[in-house]
Image (cartoon, rainbow, N blue to C red):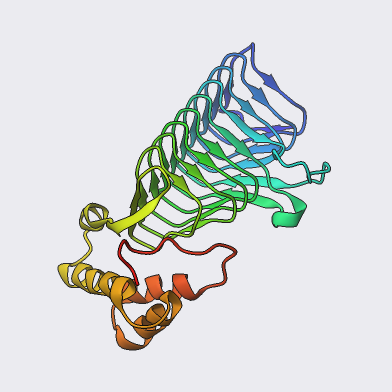
Length: 268
């Protein structure tokens, strides 16, 4: 066991032999820290939280009561192989959230980036790859193998089907089921997930220049009403546009995926 001398551990907490706990961490009453857990500096694990499995928590994270971080995958194919959960810096994991380790068939690592907010009761499934500054609102369910880009927001009570990719800057409305890939900066709403425009509010909040937003809006119209297939339209965007964000969107569409795409309303 490697516990820094500045760590504060409540007498009722249970820290298993082998755990690594960095400087200035706090482990609260009745919390459990497993033997293969590594906590970075200034991590707070509040009362009754469980951090277990082969799990790495970055600096300045906070884990709230009754969260369960690093348990085995909810996958019948999992046979006990040694897999990981890696969480970046400054993440906030709220009450009752669950985050599972990976599976051998999915690459072996579930990963959460920096500055993420995982709200009450949200779930991050095995082998999911979560970007930076992602927000999962209360009781969101992210299935196995899902990829969420940077700055994605998923509204409360929404579900993301396994293998779905959601591009950077997209926003998913509350109580939405997403079963297909979502383009970067997309706005998705309705119970069965409809692509209903761009996340213009999010783009403005990030300080994206007006010219880039105008280019993205034009690209969206091309995807909705241009000639050829959805992929043909995206391919033309890589050839015709000088906007880095439009190119990112087009390359996302042209990348390999196991799912089809949500397409713009009225797309031909």
